[in-house]
Image 1 (cartoon, rainbow, N blue to C red):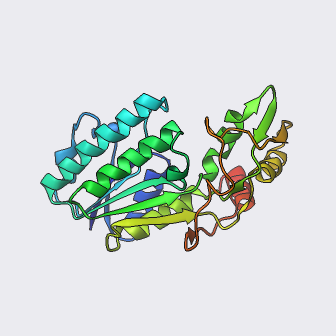
Image 2 (tube, rainbow, N blue to C red):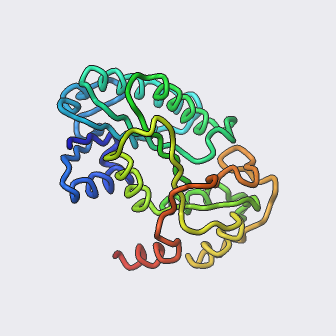
Length: 251
């Protein structure tokens, strides 16, 4: 099966291409690095020729509200049009758990706009909503830092390893289109402030984690369950401390 991975040279895309290839599929990494640009349409017709499935794990180069919305709307329109012309039978997109619960967040709003375009398309689709990646945990801590203190809300948090995301997305990609969504999350759920307190201690990071009910998560105050999945989510296998130990040793 030919599966084109848009954003296939990035964090999740590269892992997904490797996993699909291991299972005997013709997985093609498509990104500006390989001459495919969804914003301009460059290379789309050529790379989609003969593809049965397209998986979109691309990301905006800018997180500014207007720029990220422009990226996801324009690139998704171009991609869906090219898929229609190529006869692609399944469009898979990776999104975020809780997008609809925090629409004031500019990035989440852009992902909602992307999903609406996909849902209105004639192409059968699957949406994979993932929680925050382990690989982004340090960035979350940095974003939450003010005057040397990491301010985190005491809400539920259930991050997931990039490898587990790729595994889940791969299974969806080779399956029957859901014409709906599935949620994926890590195997452990905890309070977000407690998670970061433990994580910083494990990193040897001296910053103090302050529990703050009004702390913002990239500009918005999350609710108790904004960032965690509902019942029936697919759970990964890799625990954060195991992932941290493995990445620290380069395994």
